[in-house]
Length: 457
Image 1 (cartoon, rainbow, N blue to C red):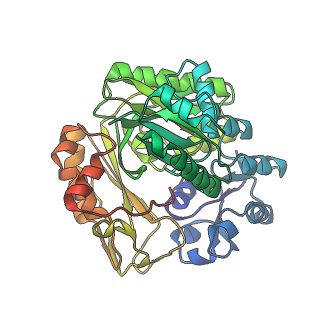
Image 2 (cartoon, helix red, strand yellow; image 1 turned 60 degrees about the horizontal axis):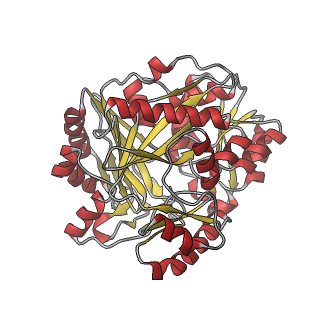
Image 3 (cartoon, one colour; image 1 turned 90 degrees about the vertical axis):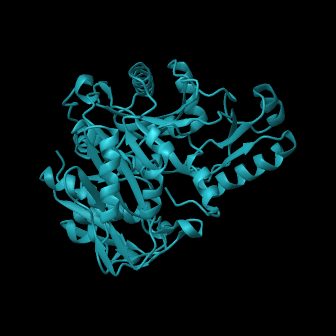
């Protein structure tokens, strides 16, 4: 096992990892930017190192500063959390080159799966269903490819994620302009402007399978997470199991995810994402080679600690459980991402000082966060304040528990999305489970909420 672990991240995920590290009996090192001097993760860690100014390129994305902090404190492993450098193969390789263990998959697996068109090719070879589209990235022939697929189509960035570099094209006359916009956005966001084209799947659900794999090649797949409640390709509510996935489809998705992981030589934890079409067919989208924001819902319905699992696998330990244990569904869990945003103003970010805070509690309620009364939410990073996770015997009971927990949550001084989550839960479509990725759009249209820019994750 490791001697000391540095957590190369901030906010609630840094707190979550520090807690797991402490329960494993391992000293932890927090890093922070100048804007995060008041963050909770600093006080919870055994040591803390300032790694630079507030802008993330000069701090949390500064590989040299992170490696120097690890060397200075004697850490022998780095946990990247999610976002920032968590899916950066070059950083994972740099850790190895400096004698550090990157708590995640190997650099070569990140490279194989991090480029979406390459991941699709690998999925095809592993007999995983993929959305019809171009065989690889395109530099020309966009119209010919789109016409062969049939409009509407999606133009997609080959690198990265988070909804950036995506364009829906319904009109052939708009294709050239939308390709150019997608390429420019992808170049800015990921330093890679390559794109490809896929057939547009109308009214889908977004369903993902959590996997875990050890160095010996043992792979397990967990119950699915339904991430269909989204805004501008950003997840707002996640739940497990999905109200739209029957047992036979679940087993097929899990088997597909396991085949893909084995084809990639994958180790550690990761997530295979799918689109679920209205006709019940599912299609591979991408692999997130890291811990997901929504990992707590899987922890709730399985009783397994995914962060501790990550650390043990990175240390070379075998998986301590098999598919029967990983796939055992125990109740229903729902997660709400509570952001510092104002839904009535197009989800405009609302940084500022929290003047009072009351967190929900009680049976089956978990709130992962880094905030406290008096904490100032900085303007430099994504707006996630915390994640409310509820767990109960079944979906109706979980919805009731979530409504109760949301009613207890109080964050004064800044706007939050908590009340919007209450309105979503109360909507008849959410109760029925009959919704798709456009569900939030219909709510916003009904409430005449303007659109706004997406958060970082």
